[in-house]
Length: 312
Image 1 (cartoon, one colour):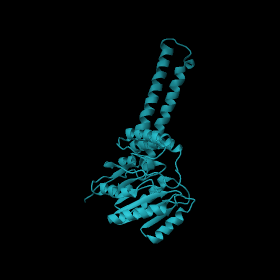
Image 2 (cartoon, helix red, strand yellow):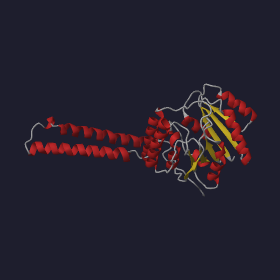
Image 3 (tube, helix red, strand yellow):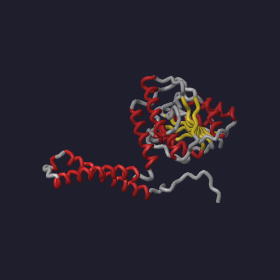
Image 4 (cartoon, one colour):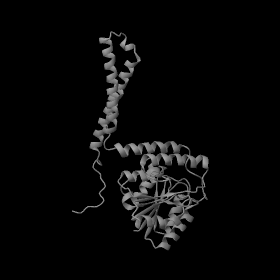
């Protein structure tokens, strides 16, 4: 199959018929062998009934329905599992992403050999204060930490090679940082395309201010897991050793001062308690690294490496 289009959605029954018709018109014009996978993330409106109605008239449309709302990351992950196309394109269901972008996103994967192409909504129709400014700050932080030169990590309109979607797991709220997940999985050919951002026609936004706090925390998680996930002792052991040695040297200094320079009241000095605290923290960090190593060594995916080609 040439193309899989994965569309996570929540309460979008108004936009689905128009979106499905637009996608069908574009892909038929290009002659793709395709499928469209709608992932209903626990909608409480008629979204699932609309999906079933659309599927009755077009068997290339498929549906996955969650029992409740699990979030966009879970919806994308299930869509990736079900996708059969050599190229996988994701887009939102609210009609703010244009299906007319599909042919070029497909071409950049097939002809230009990108592993992943991320959309960049250069001109937006969102409220500048509540969305644009925070998005720019988080995109700048993501660029700095990941070293991936993308302007819009959170754009829902992306295209992937089949290898990418079958090699990564999207969980929590990590859908914002799929390019980072792909990079840590060994995919380095990551591109960007300016895409059209359309004004909202149906429904209301599903995201609030909490997504910015969660997004920052998820970025820190991605950075830590990607760098130290299989060698936690390199992080915890290093800092544990530094804390413990710092506290031990301070304690040694206080001991020498008491016995050789006749300074009394060692336990009444603030440095004494700081030294004890530093050694306790250092020991805890070292033990955390040791336990992390035990967990990592016994994890079933401890030797899961991506092999690009194999000839035996």
